Length: 585
Ligand code: C2E
Ligand code: MG
Ligand code: MG
Image (cartoon, rainbow, N blue to C red; front, side, top):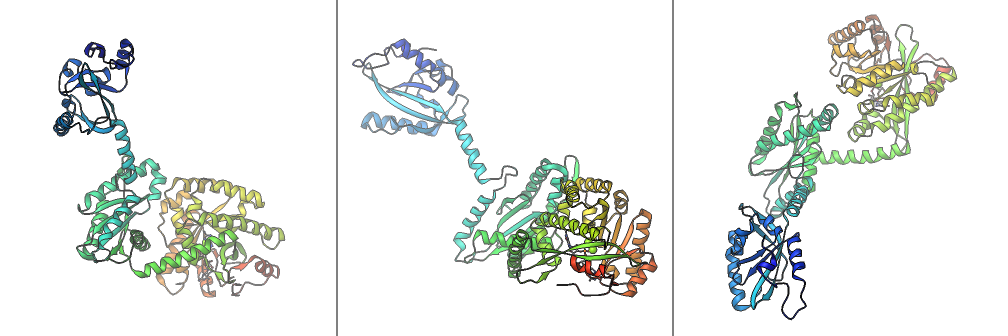
């Protein structure tokens, strides 16, 4: 290229200033990383360094003598000419001396952001300008990316939670007083955790991306879609068509999710639950509205999922009650204010004990015993089961060891285990550790799983079952008959015992359908080599009838209520015949 000195000889200083060696000045000009352009008073380019040629994409011969405006977007070029004219005549500076961000235009026509500083100098009594510019495209790209990430969810391209709430607040503000209505839809994919567990987080992510795409496609343009949690989406819609319209859109969304998703070549069916809350003016905040839609969504889940529910005040009261219970429950876990009561399981023919079942009780601040049905659903919903199950397992093994050592009873203790505990990767090692810590032989421990756990397709559940059975621990399916068990799955599992749910026992012997179900269960168990225990036996008639049907074991108030360890010990030691004594409170 033409050097700076060739083009602008002696250009490095004014006559009265000390001269910088012109060869050195030329070398600096050529080596500069930033683009340097020298322009005369008419705006014609007099010199351009290599960096300028690379930056704008011209050969030197294409630039020299051309008006500098070819390097600008057309709209700026017009303004630039006006500034030059102004400056020549009035001396008013618009851009000279100021570093600023502008757009440049490459030879290809592409526009790009640049940082430019211009200074003026006199050369041979001529006014000249030197512009130093730096291509800041990369910086712009990064800040756009940061801005995107601050507002959007990078996985699905939906608004993120923060931005969704922000947009919701903004949409609500003008209508806080005039009663204009907005609706928020809260969408949660049912059983998404199982998809993550079975297909890995990559599979889960692919599903979320496709689900977001379908939701977007099913929404009218006037709606905003946000991803507000792992598998949770929210929609903000102008509520102009009334509740029917909101419900119609929610059903459109359910419909859009209905077709199976193709995840790595496997077709997965995903259902969703949707809650809707309405804003009708007033002092509700975006948070309130989102929470209400969330509560309605939980109601949809409680109602079996794959449905739509509207928020109403009773849901708030229920949520507040749950929250109070949850707070107390957390404190109870902390303070270990739980107890275990034990209920005998007996041989229906000999009436001899065959096992005991550990049943959890919570003694509240007032000394009252709270039954598990009251607090376990909350513990389940808020992820507290693993902690509770851990405590129960430890205590039940220890107590059974105490019973065995005291010589009054030597049978297995049955411990109820929830799905989250049983599907944990470290569950088997924890059981082994507990047995080692307490000295209880594995044959003296039985674990009771619900049908849901036993039939779960989770690999870990299957693996844990196999390992525990091999270790000598027996496994039972609790409340059999109320869930969905597949006989072929039962055959693979090698569980020891089926516990017939007490709802069937309650109908014995009057209800012919209950009797038929029990007979079918006995037949199935016999075919699979499993033992059967009937739960909830409350009368002598039930006990005898079940025994006559061929059911080997039973459990229920007729034989014994659940009792604290000490009372059970006393009763066994006194060798009292089990009767219907009330559970100690
Ligand atoms: P489950 O495992 O099926 O336990 C049997 C339930 O039936 C117990 O209720 C017991 O008190 C009750 N029961 C026993 N005999 C009779 C009877 O003759 N008639 C009637 N009506 N009921 C009878 P409980 O103790 O209230 O426990 C309810 C459920 O809570 C249990 O059902 C079990 O699913 C769960 N649970 C109890 N303790 C634990 C625990 O330590 N961990 C876990 N994960 N779940 C537990
Ligand atoms: Mg049980
Ligand atoms: Mg049961």
